[in-house]
Image (tube, rainbow, N blue to C red):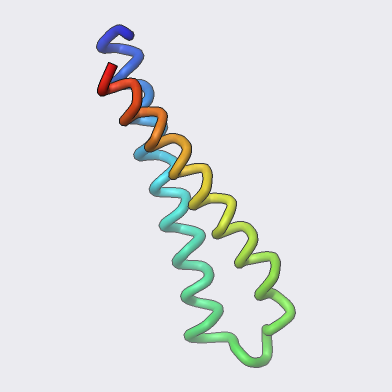
Length: 69
């Protein structure tokens, strides 16, 4: 793997982490500010947060695995 490809994987991991942190922030705001009135939003926001965290994990693992090779 070239240095450029490795940098691209690192960028993808950082981007995915940023998205995951944004989704976690949305979930936090829901819990802190809008519950219990907005309880109907829990499933959608929780799923989006889960998906974003899973995407970050996959991107981070891809970077770590490529870095070890």
